[in-house]
Length: 503
Image (cartoon, rainbow, N blue to C red):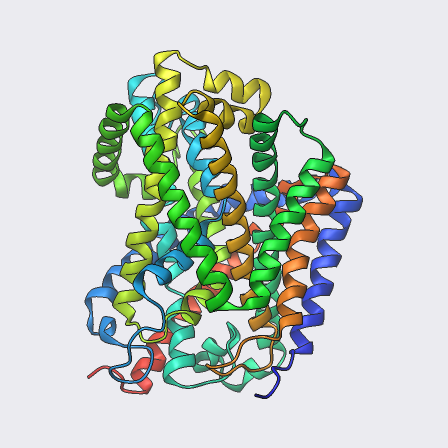
């Protein structure tokens, strides 16, 4: 089999852009962080309404495409069966899409809403508690997963129906830009994609590392130190590097299946030994509140009081989903041979939303119950000792707490590994010149991106730098991200009509 050549016009400029922008942040953390924060604040508070409208449009597009004739389009040969089983397909999408960040925010996000609730509610009231248990499910729900699923359609169409060997974001825009995608415009689009994907994903590893370190420290008594954090980073990097080397079927698929089984085990245990009735009742209430207030939450920007809730949370979350969407679109497209438009959209949105909701309903409501009953001052611990100790403190209240904390740490570790395993695979694909259906990116290319994803958080841990600044840099790309996403969907419709694929 012929070797997959690296696209030097994308590979090297992408690395240069990452180093040129992230380098000053590392060297001059305070000044660089302030500049990035100011730009982000301006975009969020002045153009945040674009994110909100984009969320509504993405959700509407999923509904329309799923239930229209477009939903019948199958990516592959007529009658071809899906390449992966439903379970493996769902687990790979889920683990790639959310990572260990879900375990962090699923456990503690409610606390921020409870103390600073939306809609003018008074902090600490029963109304604040109910919306605190609901908003996390909303932010990790159907709109976010709609952002993830939609870009997969034009990518899969180009790759599996038009049989184009170039698997890149720029290639999906050929119907609009023509041969210009082969020139500087196309290269710029792909370079921006690699930059945004690298920044968005590398920060997640930095977020999960201290959480895993706190769990290990709680069980073993080893003090949380630089050496412990670096050791965890090394283990996670080693796992996803080996998996990236093995490829999709032997690496990513196996890790994802294992991870979801372990995650469900932890959630079932918390449900069984934790506040079972409170989890059931508040979970039911949250689903009801979400259904009743879905469009209110999707459009609420608090223009009178200007509390900043929408900008700090919903606008920020939508920006994060948008920036990550081309990356997820590429991965979903790559593993969706033999699946239909309807299958991809409904599968990703429904099962992705359900998986995230399960985390918020179980461990999130464990913490909320502890706070309401006065068994543990979760919010006080959060403010005084930080979120990681608050999360571990919540788990310590359970029976067999050491075992639960150990499993929690293992799941977070594998979550991180599967996420970066998948992302390094996609980045290697995006920086290859062409790649056929039966080929995979060169192993050295996959390993290069695997280690590159670990360098940013490792460097920032060493210098105690602002991880959030690198994260914010990625989100500044949200306006180009919106333009590219809209263009991809317009191009998809144009391709289908040009090929007369739906009659």
